[in-house]
Length: 208
Image (cartoon, rainbow, N blue to C red):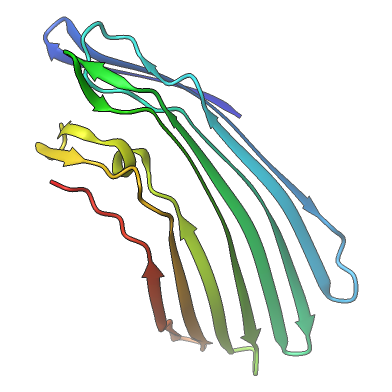
């Protein structure tokens, strides 16, 4: 799937300040195997390109950064009596390439090339002791890479009117979550409870 996004901001009436022209192409492929002996399997891959991002305004101190996301995943589900088990694994990779930006003889930010990749996954179970009651338990590990603003900002953020300075040495963030659930569906009343506990590693700070 391809999308085209053009955004124009006016500095003054009839005066073009910013003109962002962004082209994005995305595909997402999934393959489902036929259920056999109460086992279900799903495999997939995805990719996102943002490679035509640019600004057409004559005077502009902002810049859009091309990026590429890609990865794959596998998921399985198994039903055993009143229990349902599921597990999944996913690999994500994000690529940034930033060209050096020099304005009025001053380097706003240097050239930067970073790749972030990480495995994440989950395992969970559901127990159906009766038609009205469901109990669930899941263990999940997630992943998030820093975005380009956190890596290479060096200027005033027009939305918050503050000066933001990124850190090109930031690492990816990971988190681990344990959550449970209870759903009770009666004739006239439905009750739901979803406790969880989560923790993360990694630092994402913009120096003001």
